[in-house]
Image (cartoon, rainbow, N blue to C red):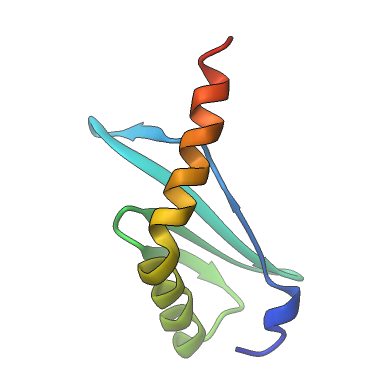
Length: 82
C-alpha cells in the first residue's frame, strides 16, 4: 500500500446496529478515506483507495479485527460511567 506509514485508523466504541454489536472503523491517509465496520470487516465506502488497497484494509481487519473490537470495548466501558 502506498504511503502506509501515513495511514491512520480510528474506531468508535461498541455500537448497536440492528440489535447487534458493531464497531465503526475509519482509515485515513491525507484526503483519502475508507469507512469500514466490524465484525464483518468490510469497507463500505471509500475515496482515494484503489481496489487492491481496499482488499489490504479488509485483510488487516480480518487479522486484527478482534484487537480493534477489544479496544472499542474499553471505550464502551468508559462511556457507561456517564
